[in-house]
Image (cartoon, rainbow, N blue to C red):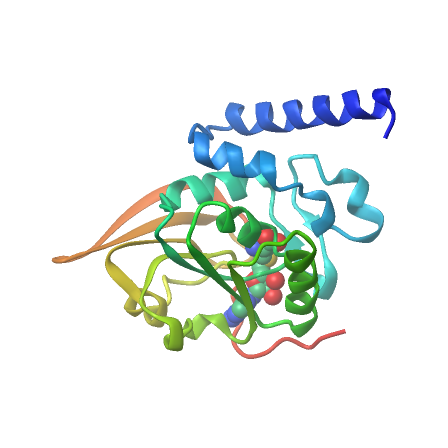
Length: 219
Ligand code: SAM
C-alpha cells in the first residue's frame, strides 16, 4: 500500500467513526471494536466497494448486512461485559458477531442459511476470531444446549420477543430485538430479565428482514 492509499484508508476510518458518533454511539469499547473490525471482508462481490458507507448492503441468500451505525447502537444497547456469553440470532455476514467477539468472552451465532454460516466461519478463521461458534439452525428456538446466556441479540425482526429466547436469558441478562411486521416500521426493544420479571425499553425505529421459521433454501 502506498502513502496516498494509506492516508485515504485512515481518513475513511476517521469518517466511519465520526458517522457512528454523530448517530449516538458513545461507548468507547464499542467504538474501539468497530475500529478494530474492518467491515470490508464481510461483503463480497459488487458491493464490497461500499463497505465503509453507513448503509445496509445485500449479501448472499437474499439477506443483508446491517448498517454499521445500527450494529454499533444495538451493541451499545446490549451492554456487553468481557465475562459475557452472548447469543446472536441471524449471523448473516458475520460482521455483528465479529464486533461482539471483541467485547464478550464467547459468542454463539446461528443462521438458518448454511451458506452464510460457512462463509462467516471462513472469515472468523481468517481474522483469528477464535471465541465465535457459528451454527446452522433455526435460531427462533435459541440454543438450549449452551443456555443460559448473559446477552442475546436478534438481528431479524420478530412479531414479539421470542419466548424460547427470553427463557434462555439469565436473570440480570439483556436481550435486544427488533419487533414488528417485516413490511412495517419496527421498534428496537431492549428486554431486561430481573428477579421480578421483564422490563422493556423501546429504543428506536428500525427496519430488518423477518425472523423466519425453519431452515433456509441455500444457493
Ligand atoms: N447480523 C448480520 C450481519 O452482521 O451481517 C445481519 C443479519 S440479517 C439482517 C438477518 C439474518 O437473520 C439473515 O441472515 C437471516 O438468514 C437470519 N434469520 C432469519 N430468521 C432466522 C432464524 N429463524 N434463525 C436464524 N437466522 C435467521
